[in-house]
Image 1 (cartoon, rainbow, N blue to C red):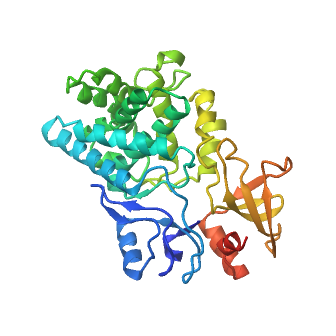
Image 2 (cartoon, helix red, strand yellow; image 1 turned 60 degrees about the vertical axis):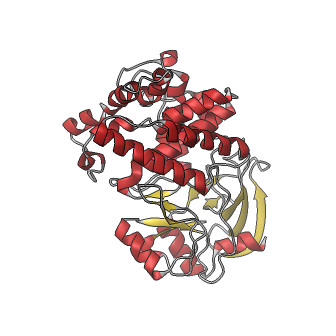
Length: 377
């Protein structure tokens, strides 16, 4: 998979990630061959870049890894979250039944596909960010809860709470949520009210489990060191659901495109969360989380101390040490493909992940597609 700016995407390339609209319908599903019309539509939607399987417009050669959620589960969950937000906005209340069904489907997919690593997330437009983000946070929370061997009923409960974790944002103006520039103090203060607002919306339902469901909404921005909001809770005062959802929430936010930023690669998100945010997350939970999240997704082109390579595979528990097909030396000169398992080579190091522009120029100058080397091997 190769991440390219949309300006470099050509008809015939095949998508490696799905793109959904706000109500859960898909603009494009992964594995779709792009046409001029599709590319123009993506431009109008404000999509700045997309992962494709290969730069070869005639024979993509590789297939996208199977995701954690089926397309049916993801689309239905996005649709249900969308309708819940609309109902709360218009009526102040909502029917939680369909969302419970989506939570159960997500947990079922997570259970059945627990051997799959989290690779690429879906693309989403700015207007529907919150809905798809809610589904991703639910999926990631369910995965982490499953790795902790939590009771299945508790996993479903946490997943349902995660689907609702941003429900308080219905009270925040869209121009603030989607502001492309830096928020001023007043706007940021307004944003910081959404956890409390979310808790209040959920408690209005008077459900038997509304207190536990509202915990995720209330605590997903709390930090272990007490520097989070809205309550400034510390350590064990934060419910396990809140600690889990906090990791899922930040990871998906970092790796998603927003009106004010480009998406970070999973490798950068990993470094930011593990090394640049001391005291924010539980180290134990964070380490477990990244055992199941591909830091270098299959198809990622990287520069290593052995030269340039493309990630061939990654396994649970050692996602920072992938199997890499080296196709060029350190100067970018093509070499016979050599497969190296970084988990078995102590001296092997990943120096950087090539972004869209770097990769495009690299491929253009060498006149070959790294993805072809992945297939050849």
